[in-house]
Image 1 (cartoon, rainbow, N blue to C red):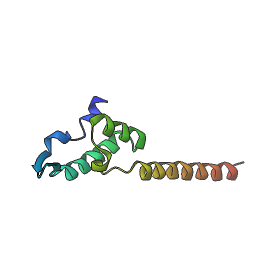
Image 2: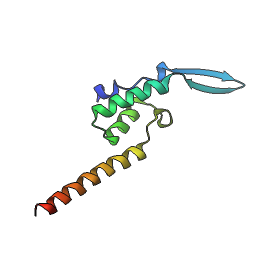
Image 3: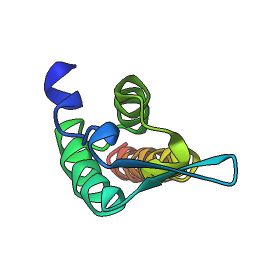
Image 4: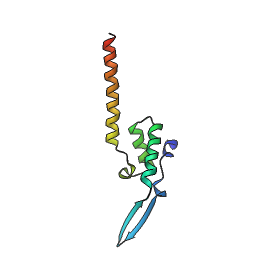
Length: 97
């Protein structure tokens, strides 16, 4: 897991805290671009597994709204691919039966 976590950026390196009028604002300049690259590398490393990607993001402490990762969408893609492969396998099984 350490190798997977190393593929994602450390959010604290991009965090800038501004205080104005009694409000604290956190700004993450440049984080989105670096995170997008990290997600591509992470997805390749885990063979596109959305559960593995989610686990790495959570363990790295990256808020989901800043991660650029849509778990529900990725999970739906994963299941669509699995269902498509099963349908194809069933068609070939019927053909050779």
